[in-house]
Length: 200
Image (cartoon, rainbow, N blue to C red; front, side, top):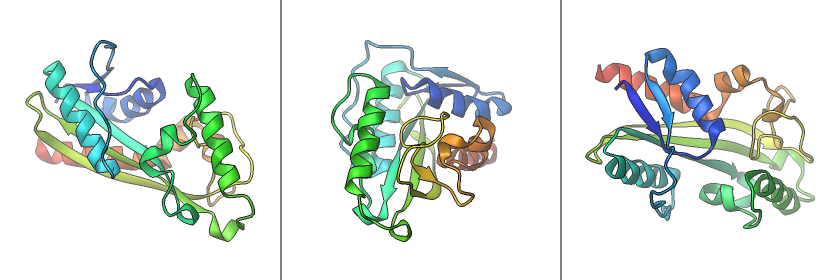
């Protein structure tokens, strides 16, 4: 595996993935195509949605594709927003507007919930599919914390400013290197690397 198409339009995700897989000599390239039909992510789990994306794009491009599905699970909300994390609020024309609306909705949903009941985690599932659509590898990672009462930090994206870690910082207050070392995507990537290396 020398070249992987990363099935996302999110440049932050491509950077995070390339930072880890690049060390294996794997060239990570963004999707770079806007004419491909976007597969409907109608799975009920992160695993199902990652497979849907990886298989659809791999077949369409005739290339090896890595797709991820990730999101936030909040215990007090029975695992919501879960697979609906990116579109939780359902509004916003840009990524920044969607992030802001999603964070505001989450804080409103948790209004009055005490800290000890605000446990949450980021989940990331990575799936690699070959040009024929066969799934070559799959890995899951999590990043535990709790939901804070207000956003903090300028790094990261999505719900990063709300996930408070055990050291008191939010995910958005970590440097990129610190986040890669600890995050759900970093954990999933390290598991994926072991699978790739074991496969030779």
